[in-house]
Amino acid sequence: MKRLCGWLMLCAFVLTGAFLPLDARAQTGTSHVSPSVQQHVEQGIRPLLDEMTVAANAHDTDRFLAPYLHQPELVFVFNGDVVMGIDSVRTLQLKWWNNGKSDVVYSERGHAQITALTPDIAIVVQAMKSQRTLPSGEVSSGNFAITQVWQKRSEGWRIIQVHESTAR
Image 1 (cartoon, rainbow, N blue to C red):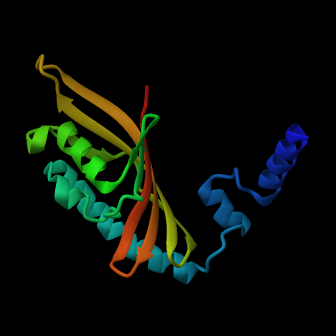
Image 2: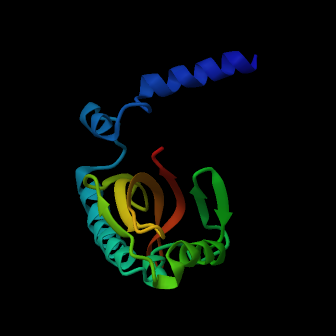
């Protein structure tokens, strides 16, 4: 019975276009918001993403985490590890950036894809790259991807869930 339910759910996703790339969903009419709502959501989030990149390249943890939900309910998944709450995420970010002394430089590998699900909920997908100097002096480059769930709250747009993974 479980297997039958799984197949039925898979068929429902396929039939509704849930597995289509985000651009293809918009072209097939499976987007659930109007173009004006999509534009409004993008105008609210894109400047925050740009500021996060500037803050990341300055290795300014607090500035970078400003648009994150500053509550224990924040969920951050990094390469399979689940981190809960802004305090835990902040501690890790400080460690990753060596308390602001890192030389890592981040850049986008393409334009961030922002998809409004409702006027107050959006999914952002970013393909990023980084370059840093290892302790040996060797320069290391890497690719990674970030998926964020954004929610418009009384204090503005906030990231409520993040999944980040590095390319192997």
